[in-house]
Length: 137
Image (cartoon, rainbow, N blue to C red):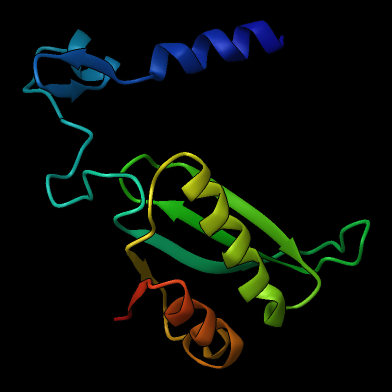
C-alpha cells in the first residue's frame, strides 16, 4: 500500500518544462498549462519564512499542546516544532535559524500574523538579535 501511495504522490509531482514547472495534470491535458510557482515568491532559501501556530486536539508525549510551524517561501520546506506553550517559540526560532545556517542560508525576513507572542516579548527580541526583519499584515 505504501509503495502505491508513493507512486501516486510521484505522479502528482511537478514536472520540469523549460524554465518553468508544469504540474503533471496540466502536462497531460489540452488546456493551457497552470504553472505552480508564483513569480512573487522568494527565490533564495531563507529570504522569506512564514511563521504561525497550530493548536492540536491531543497532547504530545512530553506535554506539547501547540506547534510552531515555519515554512520557507522559496523551497516550501516546512518545519514543525511541538511546544508545551507558545512562549517557547523563541527557542524554536533559534533552532530553525541554526538549522538554516547549517545549510548555508541566512534568514532575512519572517512573516507572522499579529499573534501577541510573535509580535513582542522574548520572540521579538530573538528576531531582532538574529538580524531578521519582521513582516506583519
